Length: 476
Image 1: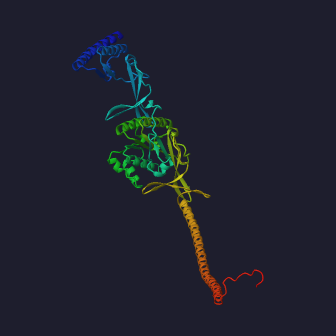
Image 2: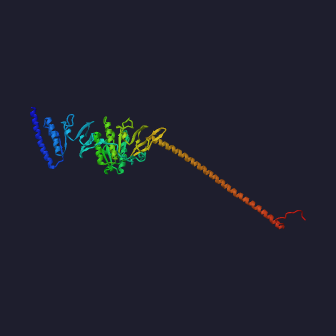
């Protein structure tokens, strides 16, 4: 019985082979084909129940394809704990590529792995791939290194006083920037300032949002005086919004690579990266972000990331522990005091540049972000109304001091004027007395001269010598 089944299987295999080889050979010769695709191999030999005969036919098929000198792509289904259904195809093939479609945390992703490739050095990691309107795309995102070139060029953050805190010149071109803080502290507003400044320089910006739609972002930013619509019309800004749960982490990374390749931006904004953390996947998220940061640096693209810090957690820690990957880290914090909540900004680190260690009060106004010096005094660090009240008190005290100084100056000027008047009066009195004294002196001098002249005249009238002779002894 088994012999008859084997015989029938053998006859069926020969029949199938004659038909297929004849038809395939004619088709290859007709168009001069160099490549052949067989999809799937299980459908071709599904009618052969004998495994031994089926394996023999597989060998004959592969041998025939090599004799024809064509490159053959053959698809097959996996078996139980084997790469292929028969467990033979991978051994007679020169190159074996395994495709995998997996679901993790309710999100699916496709991955590819080169199992073997004879005569060639190949990657052995798993690579995500994407099937879309542009076809089949594979990105070797697991092979990034640390060989990127750095730049000393500086670019503005979009906020003048923040640039001053960063050595007066802003971020490094091609660096990675992290803005972290609790909800409502203004992370997206700083990101929008950066995007606006980059577009004003004529640079292209890719804004990847994972919590807000493009229209919502433009509406919210217009409330603080940032109009992003003109940059979108000029194709300098492209906002792409997706839910983190729409696909797997690797697929998100693949799509980011494709968008960067299509847009060719000088800056990429990811807002927020903490939205990728779902369940206990912090390690996977960190690995994805590490590859993204490395990719951006190799392309000399400035990357700005925002991260939400949970209430009650340490501000100097991110949800995905990626602080070591970041060049510049800005921390936004909420400051609760005297019944109100204010915002503060500080630079936790900024590699390769001198930066401020001071906290600045962070204000969202109708004309953008403003940074103000906090008040530091005996009462501690004051912000908001407390700062304004203290500044008003200081201004009032300064006004009182200025008024006191002015009164003293006026009093001194009055005394100077009085003294100068007294001096002028004394000088006038002295001048009068001087004139009178000189007159008397003149009169006395004239009287004395007149008396002397009178004596001379009297002597002349009496024939007396003006100069009487001196006696020399007795008279004769």
